[in-house]
Picture 1 (cartoon, rainbow, N blue to C red):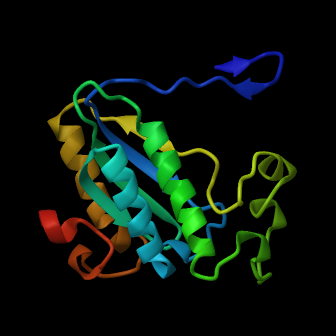
Picture 2 (cartoon, rainbow, N blue to C red; picture 1 turned 90 degrees about the vertical axis):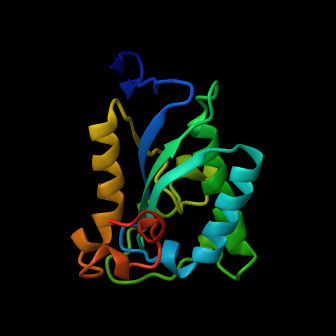
Length: 178
């Protein structure tokens, strides 16, 4: 759906209490390895967010520049956007404590300044680390659930990072098995 006056998407995310949902969350710079380079900062951000706003992590894989998750929200709770926003914000703030400053990203081959901090991101106080949005899919049945959990676990193989899912250290495959 498009907002005619602004030419912008007017997508409304579903709000289904207690739902199981698949997510993809990307860094703005798709050539980055920040998520695995700073895995402890990400783990801290997730741990703090889960303690304040509980959810069940059914599957999770962290790749260098994006992550996939399957979460099940508590009964009566449909607010996954706040949780993802909190994780992203805490991770970004946590990087400052380990010597990474988003506004001082080294230029490299393929550097795209528009991926760092656009005028819009600066106005909104966005550090330019994350893509502004995330992709979500509400899981409708057990077949979809299993497929998305499996997708999370096979993703490092799909990207050529390892030969077997068990070889990737940043995955719940070690908890759930293949």
